[in-house]
Image (cartoon, rainbow, N blue to C red):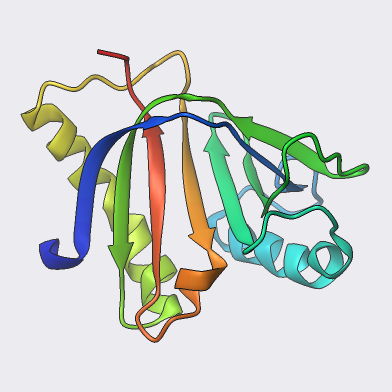
Amino acid sequence: MSQNNLQIQQVALENPIHFAGLSLKASDLPGSFESLGLLWDRFHKEVLPGLQNQVQPPVEVAACTAGDYIVGSQMDNGAEAPGLTEYTVATGTYIKASFSAENFSQLVDDALPHLWPQVEAWAKERGIAFDNSRLFSVEVYPQETVTLPQPSMYCLYPIQST
């Protein structure tokens, strides 16, 4: 990923991100990288068409936690999604890494897997410590930007408050 399309900054998330979808751990899929794409496919085919109470414009979200990978759609505050895994990204301080690519495949297959070392180096250069009590990362796919000719998205990584 070239540096000219990557923007890294420290942000305060003032409103939680509530989303609902499918959990890799709760699925019958093996715990492998290939299963992540299959989980997204399943979400798009089986869940998304009937999902109500999504934020508008739609925002798809994934959380990579210490023991699971959860894919879904951001929901209006207070909206429930019976039968789905619900996850909330709490308010707090995060590193936000925004990036784009020439197409969606390059965005998620080429750029996203190589993002972490750049974020880690950026944080280290600035003396920013990750919040080890909240080990997760969040992938945010605003549908109004991932469908552009040069799609973009961002990831959030929790850090210790300063």
